[in-house]
View 1: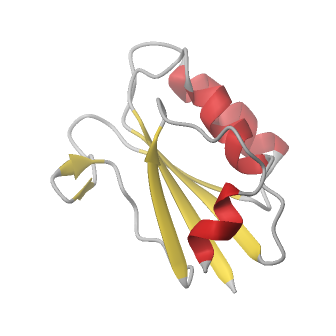
View 2: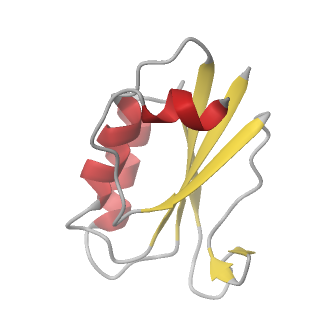
Length: 107
């Protein structure tokens, strides 16, 4: 089973690294991917997500939008389609404290 975790980000420089790390630390018995949609932040968010993509290209799919071309899901900007069998959405300001939370959400 492949699970897609979607992280939306706009001007989340202070939180985006912790949000990504909290997903990467998950202990799972299934494959997962992290889909990050970044909407042309005015702070260092874009630079940070690009660095994570370069470090984990097998885990991260990165969508870099401009402010004229944001993606909306449920009325919220940035949320690219997730091809995984399960999908969990989170914002950059929300992160996981435990390594087993993704496993419970996928069942």
